Image (tube, rainbow, N blue to C red; front, side):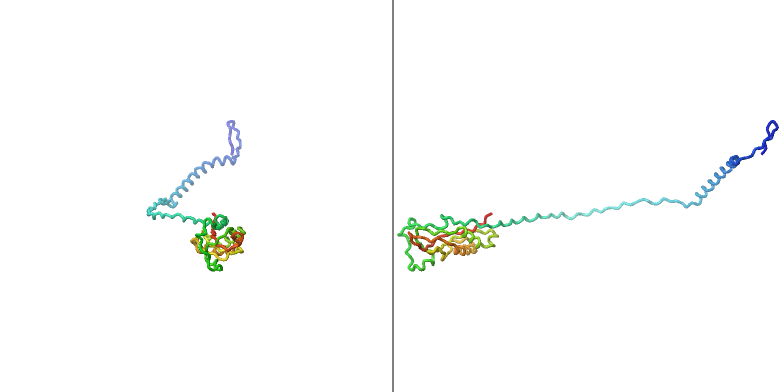
Length: 227
């Protein structure tokens, strides 16, 4: 490209790529506007129709129901008290209660019953037999152990206790030859246990002056459960 100056000189000017871009920029700009317009028109014209979805929700109605009547739970039953472990108390063989005292002051001679016709049958039933020295238990601990051994287990577990009053016939050797219930405990098993126990006891013989004599004596045996 030639450019002529005011002095009449001619200069040659070579067009650059930048110049060419500037010339064509207006064309590109307007062409882009036209193309964008056509594309947007076509997009709105041919795009599927959009609809809003129904997002409403319903309310479920709750129906009130009548509750059943409240059931009253009964309280638990009271715990049954377990019976105490039975323990036979120390055998009541005290001197003042074991052998009923028999003295001539309390039994005057004029009031004494006649002696039995047959002395060999003295031990058949309780009768008055005079003595000056009463019989004594030889071994009280052994006697207590005998009572404990003969105490019925079922009665021990149930806590049944009682006193059996006996008539006991003791011979001249201190052995029990006969025994009878004077007053029972109210329980036949305890009465039988007392009779069985007393036959195993050992006594010192009774003395009338300085002579051994067979005697009938009152003898209580108590079965007791200690709590």
